[in-house]
Length: 168
Image (tube, rainbow, N blue to C red; front, side, top):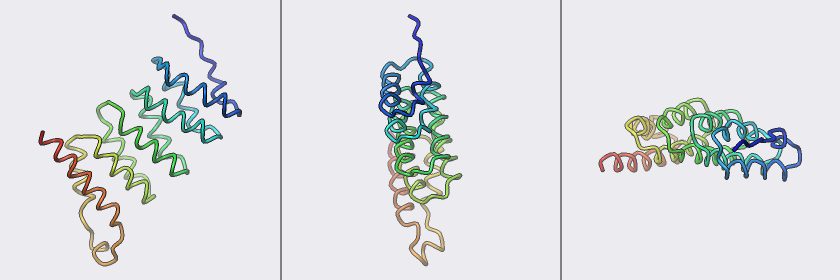
């Protein structure tokens, strides 16, 4: 069966048309879905962007993970990037821990780092465990000021989850 997808409809300023097009592609999950949906991550309307994150989460694969990682690094709306981090961490493919660790290192936003530390608990690997072990340790500054407490506690909780899962 040959399917023609009208990709310009996904960029239409009418959010209803764009969102529904993205949702249909996510549900249909054609091999090229991620490539077609990825530009909708930067649509002007948040409902289209949310649908794009969900559709890429359904589509999976390297194109979807690359698109989600790029969106997380470039987008300023933290609530939307948190959803993208969760979607990225739930993709069933190897190597996601490297993407999440790279995101952690490149962003300065504290809450984004906390979200990445939580997401790493869903990506069970020795690399996740090692990275979480490093960021869960208290620094001298934290001992004095109490700063970064939520991040350290989240990293420690994720570390314990990954450690337990690796023992099984």
